[in-house]
Length: 108
Image (cartoon, rainbow, N blue to C red; front, side):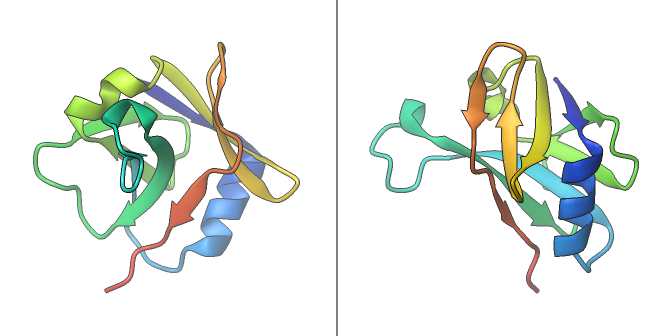
């Protein structure tokens, strides 16, 4: 799986984070959805790479993207994090995965 991050999205993420290292999970959140296939994508910042997670290829040099291997099935092989009208978005060449992508910063 490969993550592309537009310059606008990089600036938005860097503006929301003050904690290094910048480790970001692409999460398939199912809390309150009732079913795993009804989940929604979001970005979650971590202070270290969680055990068993895979590291993803990315063009965002300041960040390391990770994913739970069991959640890869919910995403396309290539996804893009973009920013439009001040809102993060997650999309692929085939579809919009989340037009209002939530970013959860790390809190100790």
